[in-house]
Length: 131
Image (tube, rainbow, N blue to C red):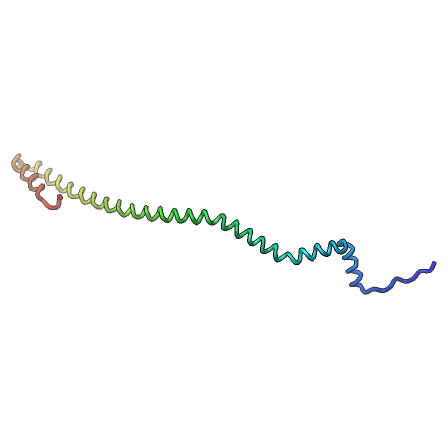
């Protein structure tokens, strides 16, 4: 038996041929090339999908925030009006309290007579602070 020595090929060629055989020939290389080339497109598609999903989630929140801001503005306006009413009512209560105190003092006075009590009541009806 005569054997001929195997031709010497560079090691990188042997590795490349082995990888080519492992990957399935041209079909495997084509698939790898396609993945490498379209990798950027996959990233862009993923970014577009994430952006669309985020906008879909954010839009209702933005609408709700706008509604809540309007409600808060209305509530502040109503609160200002209610504070004004409370201030007016407090003033009226103070005036009525002073009037009642004068009437009590007139009634409990040792010199109280019906005529004097009526005079105190009539005088308080003429005071401008009661109006």
